[in-house]
Image (cartoon, rainbow, N blue to C red):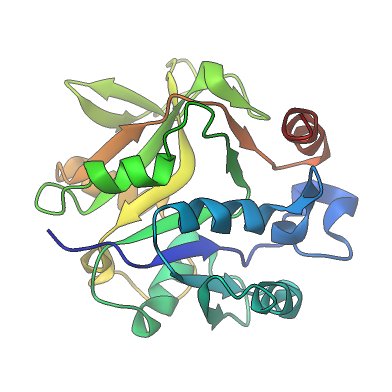
Length: 236
């Protein structure tokens, strides 16, 4: 089994729905309970023993770079984008700087608690099977998700993740902005700007999409109201 020794934090976006909170800073540097969002991500990564993290940058990227370079507990590799290439394009663009082995990917606005004493990322790494999967999504039960709409993204059908296709279908799980990915996923993907969701669908069809269900609280810090919800929780 190939070792997972790198992580990737998606940090290039503007975060427009954060309104005034991202006027003077990029979204990954928005603070929740006195700590920048990206530092929560890095602290979770550190718990797995991973010490190398790729971060893609665009909007106010220099601020993120300076912030991270003040940390000496992780080696950072920066992938700079002239225009934000979104989730799929951003990863594809960074691959030449990375190892040819599976890696963790985290959205910088995904925030979660490891209240039960087990590390989500470590558990996902343990569950990863690169022979069976090309990608494995963290799925979040909707009843344990905060700062999000009332419907999810995925159902499980015969123990396989199936993305919801219409508003009427009730889906019990959200995609929680955390995944494990093998670089081979991108071998035939284009350069440029695109999202991961088309890759999720392709892998679902090919029966190469795995999942891991997180059983603790999770927060999407996507707008000022959701930021306040997370602030109330993490301040405790």
